[in-house]
Picture 1: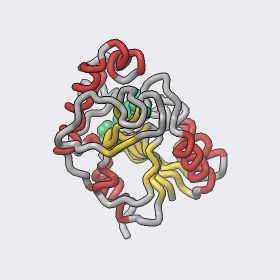
Picture 2: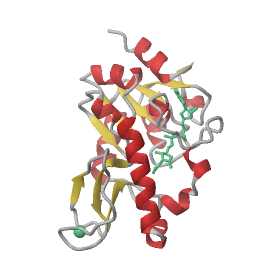
Picture 3: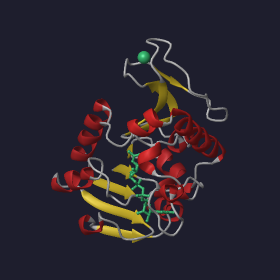
Length: 223
Ligand code: OAD
Ligand code: ZN
């Protein structure tokens, strides 16, 4: 079994989702194109840096919920996630593939390869890359940027090889990530979906469990 997760996995830890109408989602407060894109960073690096500092502090205060813990306990599972938070790692998960990067590190904007973990409780301000002098920015994938090659290749392989893909808390509207569900299905995997609502992946589900991740995931993964 491989898990494939989105923002709904961390929602009960208090980390805002992106598109949840009912909670007014992260995007409702900010214009995503302005904050999570190379253009937005070029237009106002200070604003983007402050927004990420705010999100980093909020994530540092958040705790892994029952779903993160249940997934982490299954050390044999590979966890493919769209989430940039570090809650699966903090829950003890060993094999985590972050398709959209990590908010817990900064990297060189000129992609010289320099990347360094940051203190989420005291996030750094704008600074230059110590290797090449370009700007440092969060090591997350922004709109219009490509996914980290190695993460994508590993995730594809895991989804192709698995017997069951446990899809948790994703609206399945962002590609190429969402395409992994169809890829697993066409490779013969059973698709189990855990979500509070129907999603774009519902039609691919062999089993769809409508409920909160922190309640349903532990119940499925009970040893
Ligand atoms: P969304 O905000 O699009 O979707 C969150 C999903 O979680 C929805 O389907 C909700 O119904 C579900 N959900 C909310 N609370 C839940 C709970 N307690 N238990 C179970 N499910 C719950 O977030 P993602 O699908 O992760 O990309 O969005 C995908 C990508 O869009 C993100 O990774 C981000 C964004 O652009 C980048 O940053 C590149
Ligand atoms: Zn650099």
